[in-house]
Image 1: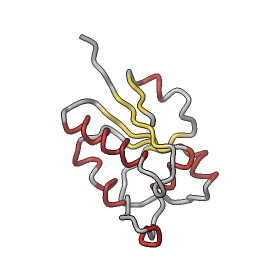
Image 2: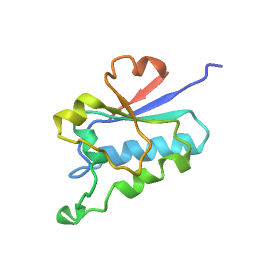
Image 3: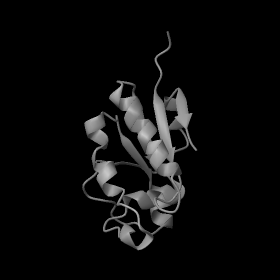
Image 4: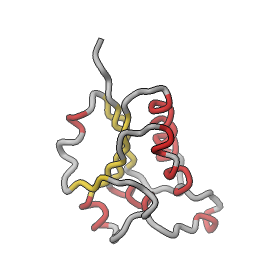
Length: 118
């Protein structure tokens, strides 16, 4: 039997649709069932990591509370693309998260057997 490792990619903004939240739920579910799983925030998805979000304006709840539970569920790591952080002007991501900032994400997917995007 092959050991499977999952990388869940969030590449969309945190508000306005549910794709990112669904990916997050899948990642938490995999990790809760002892499946090796990690998250990658890239492109507009890095906006999930902004400090001081005010989602009330769009009548949604803050995603930062969801993300703070990541390690409780047993995620291996939360990766973030430095190029995307720079592009969206995020100098310091949410300080409450343990992030692995990557200069390049090109070889990251090769470390996982399954890459999940919506």
